[in-house]
Image (cartoon, rainbow over all chains, first blue to last red; front, side, top):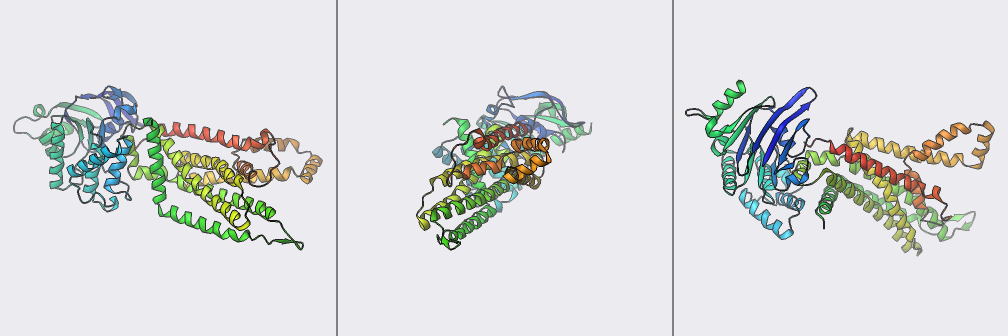
Length: 234
Length: 279
């Protein structure tokens, strides 16, 4: 589903991503882990063609990431999500549906279903300017789910959510995984990743340190946090 | 409808909706409409010159041309103001990352933005011109179909302003981009003024006496190559009143000049935005 081949991204002399190669198969629940500034978000941005790699190539579903068609069945939730403050959550979701060329009746149905699944009934017609960070994050996840994508790319999806919100989002992501959706997750919340992900990769200073099944990475008596610290601190 | 076209139309639609929602746009629009309504007093039809009352036709021709030029210049300024923050606002409000995470190309996005701003500012100008058109019709019972056609022709100037400001706003702070395009406009109007003066019989005889022909040739090159916003406006305004008819290539050259500039700036904008990082 996702392929990275010897991807490097340089900003001047700084290598934000340094010769990284890995792949994520369809139906996989994959977590990309790393400390702040490790290059996780840069990889996501290159996958979505928000920024071009200095060298190497990235592809989604066999299509180069520079091809807009590679994003046909991709949902994306950015870290620190923003919604124009003058739009309501409902209007925002409708815009997303229109951008995907979903017809009006189908869009209404999807908006209704998504609002319910992200637990925002009752707030969907309020202007986004009054939303809390957690509410914006939920609508962002809703926007990512628009058009029934096959691949979800989530950059810190639970950032700003309270523990109950985190749990609800985790349950939602678990149900999506059961439906066969591929999920690519960037997260700092290692305990959450350990609970829900199948595979993980750890990167630091732009270099890929390890990529394996969570069950293979975490030995008995260890936690993912221990493994993460061990790899990052070298 | 092809998907690419529908994406462009959607982005243009959002651009218009987002601009119209801004309080500053609503204020600018109402102030402009009020000013244009105030001009209706000029069409009283009782002007006296040397004790003779002027004909309605003469008043209509002169006043309408003046208002046509004033509206066109003011709307160019408004178009520049509307365009200068468009990319920044989309970036800050997360719309760019939302749009580009969907199967939408950068070319579709930029085309949608240009098209939305162009349609909005042209409509803005058309409404103001249409108020003058209706005022003339109601007050003096004179119909000027050329006035509305001139307004549409003048919209090419707005396309130039929108494209130039969008391009420059990618390379410099928004306000500097606005001031640069304002400068281009001022130079265009001043150059046309100088050219008109230098072609007066008195100036021609002075030039022949001083023999500074070569310097003038250099100025002429700049005059013809500079974006001819003022020239296009004059060309469009020739539809307003009595015109001398088609006068060959020189007559239509300003419009061609502006259209060529729009194409060049559009191409540069697409090229520049292609390499832009989405935040």
